[in-house]
Picture 1 (cartoon, rainbow, N blue to C red):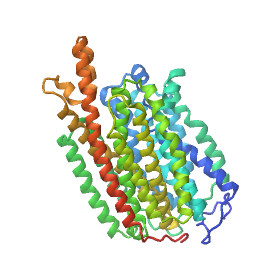
Picture 2 (tube, rainbow, N blue to C red):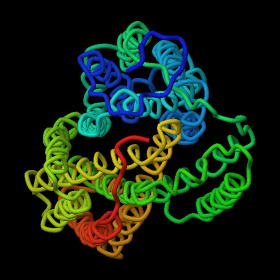
Picture 3 (cartoon, helix red, strand yellow):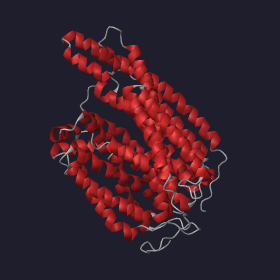
Picture 4 (cartoon, rainbow, N blue to C red):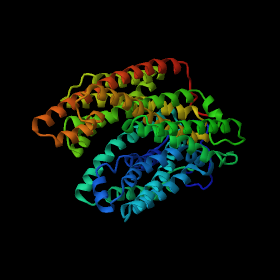
Length: 510
């Protein structure tokens, strides 16, 4: 193992070296920024009313306060992964930590909606540097296949759990402090990373990176952002022509991006990366897994609040319960693979478990709290088991000098899969909800369950209760349809994983 404090960027040794206390301590330090980056996706959940009262943003500004972080993050992942391979992953990580910490301070004390939007955009830039850098450094520090698998399992669990934890943490902080505190919590972790990172983390980069393809940067963003935007808007607004055009434009730029990568002398994403054993199947299956995870989350969250009538904070606290099982799933699947069980069967089993979680949702009624939580827990276990193994497979099959690029592609696939799951399954659930609502119901109530709740509150006693009961039944029926569709898709993914991964043998080192 190279001296972590050395200023000269080096590649890791070619022979597998078992990591010691220094590397595992460094992993713990890396988990802090990863947790905070994932939490920032949902950290504004409870802070929005306080922000609205204080900064008085317009409707459009409020949407940008929410969405700009995720859009910038998704759009820059590929760029930052490739940049880290060139300038050094530790260097990029520390630059991102400084930007993330500074933006958190700016956001906490923002005195206008415009300032908060700008701060959230900078947070997205910082997040885009932190996510691929942490995974690339894990690949660098843990050259022993067994230890690397355990480390990646921890990485996957922290990444998934952070999203659920963000909303709860924001609720607790806003209840006891002012809304800016949800950003200030980032500062201690970033300071710790800036202090300990240079001591514990090894520097590594591609020794022969070639010229940086600046033209591919705007092409990649033009490919990712319109597609993500269209897919995220479709569940709530429907298949509006604007969103269809947005997706189409993004796909056209994606074609141009792919063409440049195939013909350019020094591409941002080398095509050879996809020829590595197991990388392409891992990327595709990760997208499917994220599809299942986010496609279910939009329904279970609404179910807890709008069907069961839980307060936002109570719903968030209940939603933490399934996350408890996430900590068991990744280590268990890692142990199975290390004990000689074929990875193809382990991943296929993870997809089957996810499908079983969807199947449980098909049996819920309008008062099935424990069943919904059990389904969410089973589903989450399957997703984390799948993602941890696929990430390990992809990172093991990618050349070490391309670790940042490989990590960013996997995370971009997760972003696409999640947005696609929300769009497709969200559209199915919405269509079934509207079909289940009577034609005599108010127009707003026929569109969404939220509209039905608003209309029911305005109607006198019995009429409001009747409308509310009908809407909740219709929403639950829509969720049943989504559950069946998700179960079928994930069952097919289990078969696909078993077939596509069956004969893949990954070399431990390159």
